[in-house]
Image 1 (cartoon, rainbow, N blue to C red):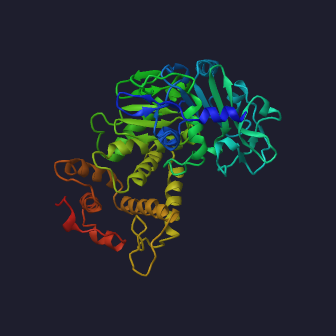
Image 2 (tube, rainbow, N blue to C red):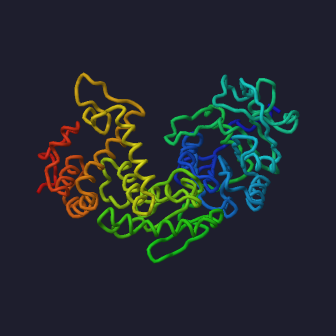
Image 3 (cartoon, rainbow, N blue to C red):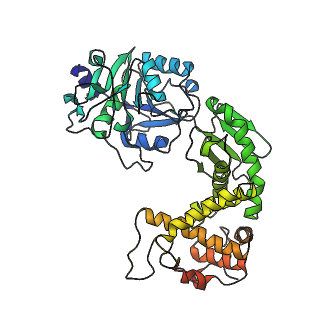
Length: 474
């Protein structure tokens, strides 16, 4: 059995590409069954950084694996599954010599269902400590695992990691000409900033060699399927909608909520979207997480219990849209202002009590550190030399809560201050007039929107702002 591991991770001749670099691996990381920011490039950076890696955002069974030799399957949302077409596609890839790395989090998750179809029946009961096979030449296995393969699995699987009782926790076996590796999800990183490359010392070389049974041509392009290379594209008058076959049941509801929120956002922002901004909407297979890239926004289809509940989705759609609305210059308080406007739109669309509760809770978290909102700036830097700066989560509490409090104070005085502010920003904050959108410029425009000089008030609140530094003057 150890011979199998040694052969797999032994040095092999690398394929030479036209760019002069060498590659052993063309890997595909699947995001179609579960979107996470970690799978969106971070996994590949941690474990396959010197190789070529692309992502698949759409139905896996439609992905052309002909010039790939490694498929990485990190997760599948409980509201989806691997279809028979997916399983057939994966099996065919293995039989042709491809390598598949399947990570499983529990005996009942969707990954475990797929593992069983591929011959790996995970069950609970793994007992620490974990021990790596001698051939891997590592002293410690990092990360947690509570799952194992059944007794006797070592007869058909080459163990990579075993538990205290000798049960196989991570292993590999031949399938056709290829190799299948199964491992607990906790054995690889998960941080979106790629700061936790656990087990890279043994996991990276195993991954590099899993697909050595399948030839790749590095002289040819190796491309993933982006979000806009969708299985389904709907062109509407004001929105292009992109989604995979898996998410088709949610497309109509997502289009509806996106279109219904837009006029309310526009009223709160005071200006229409710039040409082309937020005109493309891609659906993501997740209940948490989204992004804005200006023209393209990605939306989690199950955010806040959608489609059964819509209040959180209203806030979420608004948040991602506002990121496009504020361009070409992001706000100093870019994340909080997007959610705050989302709360305002929630009010406008019939969810006032919930929106006010969220605003109040956000402000309350800041008051724990700064009861009068005069001790810290938005970065948690103290106003007075004898007060220590904030750290960690406290900085986040201040950044969000103090921002919300400022906006609420201004809204009490002028309910449509936000619209007036963005009307001025659209007119005066352009690439022709300023190079950087600073807090000085922000306060100058807010003051104009409110009809009075706000610099003294912001300085009283602990902000280092000066009208003399502002590019925008009236």
